[in-house]
Figure 1: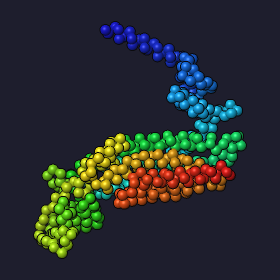
Figure 2 (figure 1 turned 180 degrees about the vertical axis):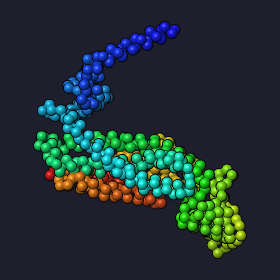
Figure 3 (figure 1 turned 90 degrees about the horizontal axis):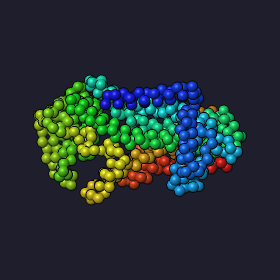
Length: 463
């Protein structure tokens, strides 16, 4: 047996050595060259003729991509679509467009990457570093803080990609307009459709990558973030208590005074029981202690506490209790997170199944069902907003970027990004509180961008 394995290993080694000697002198200048050898094998075997009869000329990577799609459409019986796809990279004169497409894709991706770092830094500082600073002040271990930052990165990436697409594309195309490169493209016979295609192609690629982050990495990061944050709270409950702040849950509100370590100057606690009994607790100097009981987040030791109990329907009747000392157990779900798995912690597939199950259950509140639908539509609308932004960027840059295209693209892109983000926030608020349809509230910003892009594109073509 040992001799057999040695024989097989020697044969494999000799084959690899022969391949290395044969291909060592090759010099590949572009990435497209790697596909050339596969293409030669593909043509020589006659597979392409058997599948579709499509003739393939000089090969490069972009041509190979569209030929593969053309073959795929041919197998599906979509002959006209297959022919159009196969001729995308070729003009009527026979000139190949792969040089133009490769140049545009490279420039667009470079500007997108720079804009992505810009928005990533803004969201990171605004949402993460401020939270991390408060946690570090509570003497939480640095390793736990670092892990919290890593788990929060998918959320920042998912938010940054669409806005980076708009700003990056506007700046790139604005530069091409200012430096008359678009004029050269047009003078060589290239139409606006030719320029629009690589823009939409890269926008679609960014959307797919952003959707993967938003649909898989974001739930995974959120689950790990909440799990770690929960363990930090259990070991140090004072992390959740911020000076002069208000903590809200579904039916509970905690108003916090000055905080120094584990000591709180004063507390006000609002609570509604299952019997609709309203409870208000007002306490003087209090302290926060760890609890060993299961499910209890923290124990509040209150001094000079006053408890007011009444029914909302009969507010004239109430009970008033006073106590020099009082202990109040605050459960985990009362402050930091809800029980069960939240919509943010689910993939789109799991969330869709959950929504179907909730629709069959008549006891599920409509407000809760609508919140799940909002999150489900947001998983698609936000990442695929890159396609709509890419469609808007081309006509905007070509119409208004003749002078100082990069600067104008940056300013206009940031303004549109702020308006888009505002519409998303308002859609979530009206959807959660007003019960508006989750699809329309989450997709309305993209539809507005598409309508504006269509208008500007028509003006560009007419011009």
